[in-house]
Image (tube, rainbow, N blue to C red; front, top):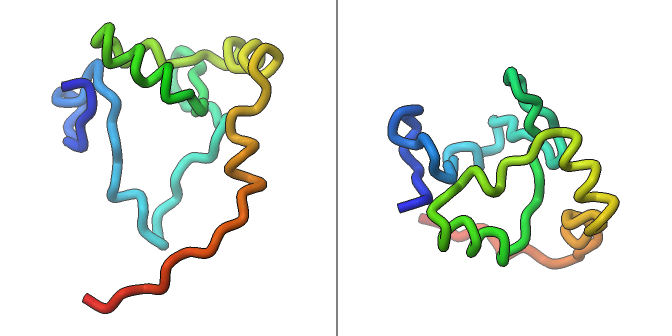
Length: 98
């Protein structure tokens, strides 16, 4: 499986980590296009569903890993893939009691 929610670094190596625990009001999730503090300056980058499918087909999560210089080239070539999120207006459902 290429996707995991297991927080262990060893268990998520080479996989897409979905951190559902960050979806809480007191958490600070990294913003789109933010640089990560690593030896190789990777950046949080929006990807298309086709790119996700390509990662799954090839069983290589790193195909969706981008360095800061690659992100700038992607923006020039593809435009801002995150823009629709910023301009979309929608109503959220009312909070349900549990």
